[in-house]
Length: 278
Ligand code: PMM
Image 1 (tube, protein in one colour):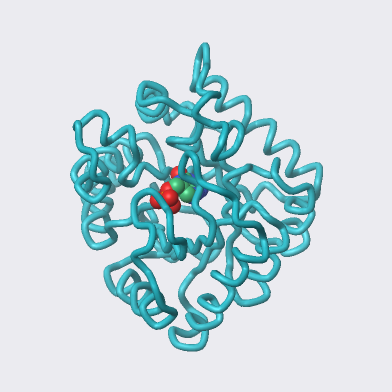
Image 2 (cartoon, rainbow, N blue to C red; image 1 turned 180 degrees about the vertical axis):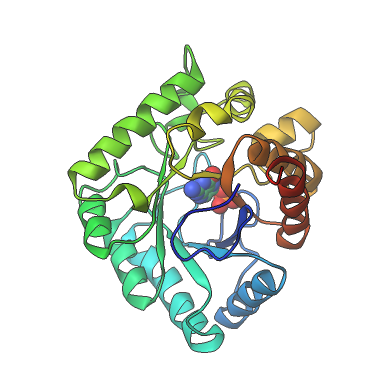
């Protein structure tokens, strides 16, 4: 889909590369162990065609322990500064956090977007901060938090309930002064959702895109793909991720959040040619 998000220079679906500087993320935890290695990984993602880098210092996998804003800041701010020093001001950067303090420090260090998996529910200071900075803001759907979400995956109609929650988050954001152009919607695949729920969301994604907010979808290497493929190792879920990325693009996704950048840049370009360029 042609993306209308400010700063994104692509006429196709944008690829957001996951950069987790956490020892325990479910799919790539612990793979980045030094600042130099992190910057080199970012440079490689950009060279492979990523349009934006999503930097996170807190694992959100089910069961993950919250490390707190101070530890998160120690993990992400030096990396953001190093990226700006070594890779320049052009790469688009996003901070994956639900704490306003972390988001503010990251914005001051040079990130362009805030990606909030709590959709503004975790920290009351987040939405006013985003309104002040006038930056793109990903409002994601989830229920509970990493400790509780697996017990909260109960829906009568998951698509309708995610849609209603995203509308509520949008109202809440706008009440805090966030403007419509800043908002990017994310259904939150894997967050308080069973495999069946994640598949239903992908099947009916176009119901979410009709509200006019760009959609970000993050299927990459997630557990539902492992369950469909009977594949326990997240690193072996690349082909399943490719299929989910195609379905997301066919359903109107403007951004896909992924780990396997070189492969998914090609998958997204081909899916764009098949579904978005008639
Ligand atoms: N998934 C994860 C983390 N952050 N942010 C958004 N907007 N959407 C997602 O689906 C999402 C996210 C969990 O995956 P990871 O541990 O591999 O980063």
